[in-house]
Length: 480
Image (tube, rainbow, N blue to C red; front, side, top):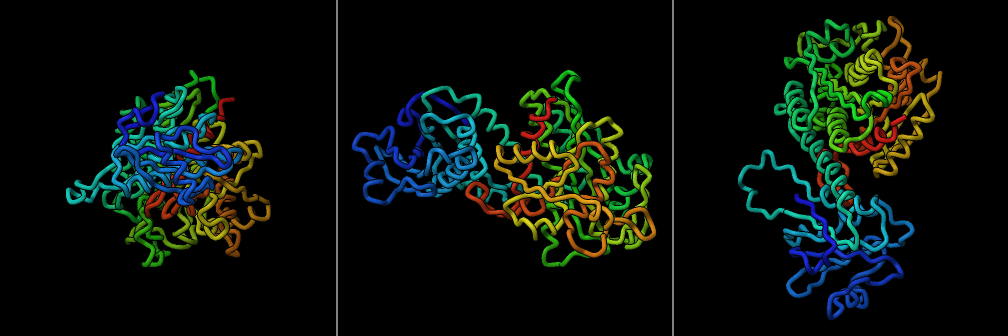
């Protein structure tokens, strides 16, 4: 979808549908002749409360009046919600060109929210639909009409929302269309298109490096694992090196610890942490952010075969730690463990990993918050702030020596299945903490937010693209 900005009035654009917001107690700033919007309010069909929405017409145009609620409480996330609701109605009305009249006296976060909410709500995954649906109308353009130039804020928001929709595209692709090699090919093309270089390590190189935990996950699959690396330096080497590390299990059967069959089709989404990392790095490059990042994505399948890892097997991780694999469905932490060590060896001074890691975080936080666990209060606080600004909220869960003791192994140094089976999201993080050591590190468990979450601006089933905007916002803050 094209996004344009103008200082012309909404009625002077070519939009067939115009969205106008109204704050409580403020009335309509610019009503067309005949005051059709005031008439909507007066009739009670529309309201100033957040979430109220009504439609009228003026000279062949559709007018959508959107209640915005209290101005003092209206922020970027509320703008995304308002824009998502308006876009849903505009799509029902078969809108081709939508114009938002930007409310007076709002900051760039509101402008960005209007763009992001619109583009995210208008998203459709059409890769396998064929020509049958090609006749369906698509929204072609969003125009922002404002009294001042909002072009820079709108352009940045367009980059972010477009990248998030690419994450959704990756997550929605089936595993036969996006095995690890295809994800590596995608990363290579993506990097080239955005002026970066991708480095791909194949499975033989992963094994040769000594990444025994990562390799153990992939050994049951006919598809070889890939370690995908993207580097971006917009600081001329001056900024500290931040590693963004993503789990990309492109399909997870659970291995010999087989998942319930009713839910297994959803396991194509187990690569969404890795997808968020790829798109975050290229978006930082597009934004020319003055940061230095390395994006690492461990891509593999977790499958069943005569070569698959058995419960009870012991492997040696890249840093020499021995691990009892007592649960082959606790595979993501094995992939991340070796990627974290790799990042440390490459000189990373801060580590942020992101993964659809545990059902435990879903039980704790549902799909409203992702969990964050960290060994560094400053980094955790920074990520919490980035989550609030991006609208991708996180809730910090604690680390503790007693949780760390839960991952100690009986026959090896640590185990990937702690006993007793409590605090599962935290114990998984404690295993990763072992490999992060004293390097400032944060772990984002997005199992509850990554897919099948309905919201006013992510309304369809499938991948949400959650975490990409948060990673960009967090990385941009880590400039010193």
